[in-house]
Length: 532
Image 1: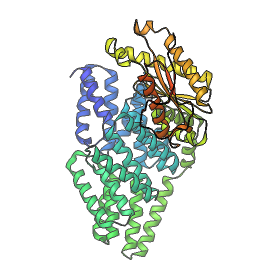
Image 2: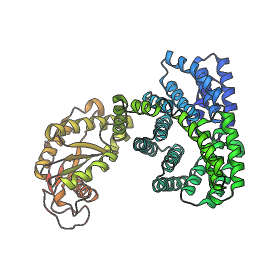
Image 3: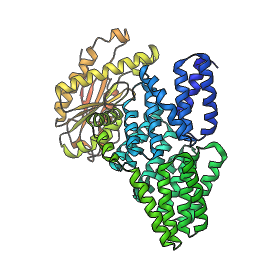
Image 4: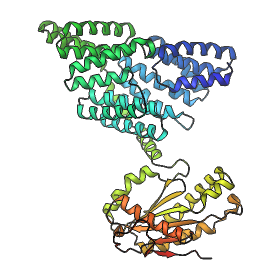
């Protein structure tokens, strides 16, 4: 295996979920050996971190932790930000298993802060998800929901369907743990619909979430069947390790207690406790103590229940000691992290090619503007004969034209209407929003912008091919109803009129409250014709 091939295999393991953790651990060990043979320090470091991650996933937390410190020192020394980010994310997982939620959150924050343009799309989604997990564990559920929502939106935008499954699963489980069963059920519904739409099988972690939500809704028999299926699937050896199995057995015990099957519940709980002790899974072990107290009480063994509750309480206090939650919240509330959160939100509302606002931003902001501003005017801008530029020159040249058009539209609109904005709707189509601007004034302004674009020195980009635009203008008063679809439809109708009239011109209704018309009717629009 060459260095290039080895790097590609490592990336595949790094970016995927851990359903086949045991198999991947064997492969990662072989890859580390091969990287050493190649003498490639970067690949050696990546392989060691990959192996440490998988060790944690199969339940060998102590060994995983021992391997991470040296790898992080190498990554810092060599300025390898993606590797630093991955290590911080793994440390977050390790600290969560150990029950140290403050350190879990601290590492999760660092893993997101270290993301840059070199991070893979999977990292961008998963590290945000892990930060959401850590925030939920620390009790900051509103902040966690924001991160889950960011991760969901980013995964949908990038078409990363398996990571999206994990995001929805973890979100649903967090809502369940917080006792918000209505929200948990809603997120779980979206999860199951998403899995069915994209043909994604429900793995043990998802089944565990479904089972926990069933318990929360009193569906104990269904929950036991779900968890038995979950554990059978886990025992195929393709999914995770002892840390996951301990969780699954604890959920099964809760379902069985709810059914009144206390003997079966005790057996499940004993097995979970053994796995927790062997794997140093302190956070799960605390919840095992709590469930044992509940199980004693269900059997009427009140003295034993009280004694076990004291054990649970002492373990819980130790876990939450030294004011870790306050420290963790202080970390999250730093100005740098707040700014970073806003930056991610801003990136999700920008078009990657042009830097303009995107359709998501329009859908968020335009309905409010329509409702509040009786003089709002919008314009749909379309490049004339853009396909010819792509076909005769290249798509790269087409992209350059789009970028330059975006700059000109934004610069000219800002000068004329400072409160307005430009968004790219898709392809060669743009939207210009002009608040508090009468349609006649807007049409004059937009016609000046059209002429500016036509007169731009395009020869450096397109040679002899001209670049012109057509614009359809509409105000809220002429739309049949004050809604985004109605207003954009009116602007689109006028754009069609401009195209039919010869292109390179602006068409508007001049603010008339128009009667219902056939879509894209060529009747009474006012047209600013192209001028030499």
